[in-house]
Image 1 (tube, rainbow, N blue to C red):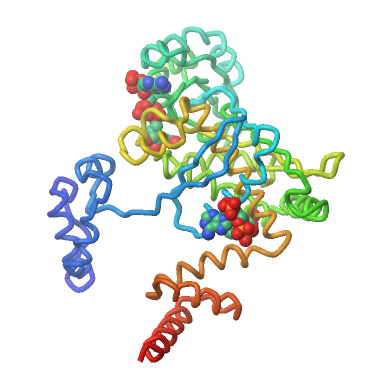
Image 2 (cartoon, rainbow, N blue to C red):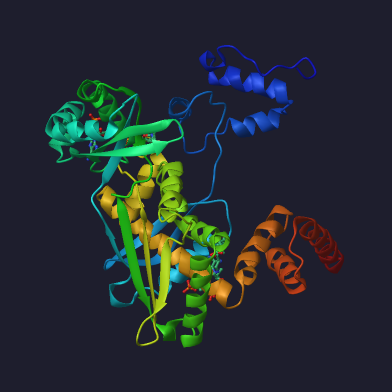
Length: 430
Ligand SMILES: CC(C)(COP(=O)([O-])OP(=O)([O-])OC[C@H]1O[C@@H](n2cnc3c(N)ncnc32)[C@H](O)[C@@H]1OP(=O)([O-])[O-])[C@@H](O)C(=O)NCCC(=O)NCCSC(=O)C[C@@](C)(O)CC(=O)[O-]
Ligand SMILES: NC(=O)C1=CN([C@@H]2O[C@H](COP(=O)(O)OP(=O)(O)OC[C@H]3O[C@@H](n4cnc5c(N)ncnc54)[C@H](OP(=O)(O)O)[C@@H]3O)[C@@H](O)[C@H]2O)C=CC1
């Protein structure tokens, strides 16, 4: 225990939001101003915030931006993005601008099909029991669908059963996959409920013991495929095309680079996920598991040069997103984000997010393979630093210019320049 303070606070969750904040403020020595800032819920009703997660003491705002210029499957989209990193939104808009020919980016998502896993242990003859599970497929599907009549009425629900024998450190186990069409939901709650519902039946069929009953985030039956042709003349010629293809080849050959390459894709995907209140951890987990599906970590996208010397890119990744359920309907700003996007189904949202991921990847590769990432990115970052250091009006651009031209982009230097230039400005006025 430090300084007589303890973080063991029984029934903290039963206290009111105000009381919880008071306890934390006392524990951490927050000033009244700091506590007031936390208490500012902005566009989120405190009651909604308090019901979304546990132990809420405040709210935190992130900037809500939009990327423009997106033409996907022949339809124009303004894309909401919530993100803390400078240059991502500018880069997305910049890329989308050169991807508008021939109907824009093509993007096709498969059906919204998720996998629920049921782990059966304690079997001496898992291969034989696998057969018995498959023999009872219809019964298992029927039992699962009893758990979610709404989903079934909408055309979704459990559709298939698969069974695998997996060799683990504790011996073989039988893993039953419940294949569920979750329609417009992300689907985890729906699938988990079904997996729990069928577990006793599977125990009866196999004579084994069911342990875990949970959705898989390796959503490889719920993929988005996005692809685009970027005309060489729109991006500085064949030299740039070759440079981008070589940049991709680096990621294809080296997992250290592939991780960063995929991070660039996720810049766009997760920014849209945050704006629309998706489970972004599920999307990240799915993306990286899919990237490693061949036994080594690979880029989620591919860039090639076509016979005419133009750049062609394609992306394939899981995209478990919903427009119903989870927080999408609860958070009022997420509802506005979906309205700005104008998507009508979870499939359409997945298609937009795949297209944004591909565009985001292109923007980063183009910058990296030509002028380097720092010019565009750091220029925008320098702007943030100048503003944070107190610059306003014309002073922002002056501070940015100096930091960029001297290649010294950091907060301390921004503060130094603001102080110096402000003083000079004052002197000039006199
Ligand atoms: C930053 C740019 C866009 C500048 O690019 P530029 O060519 O200097 O910009 P421009 O002034 O010629 O404008 C081109 C278009 O960009 C957009 N644009 C331009 N400026 C703005 C702005 N201030 N705010 C909003 N949008 C902006 C806008 O759409 C504009 O078109 P217009 O509207 O003029 O017709 C470019 O350098 C770029 O795309 N860079 C890539 C930046 C990037 O990828 N950032 C992500 C963060 S780095 C990272 O995390 C990922 C990474 C890089 O590690 C991934 C990887 O390694 O693969
Ligand atoms: N590993 C993971 O990824 C996990 C994620 N989660 C969380 O699960 C949540 C997402 O679960 P999800 O099942 O999407 O959420 P919900 O349970 O909130 O929504 C799905 C339900 O909405 C109803 N519904 C109404 N209209 C539709 C429609 N058009 N399409 C589909 N369903 C419809 C259905 O039935 P009904 O009306 O009967 O509800 C359906 O079961 C997220 O919050 C996620 O963070 C939870 C556990 C694990």
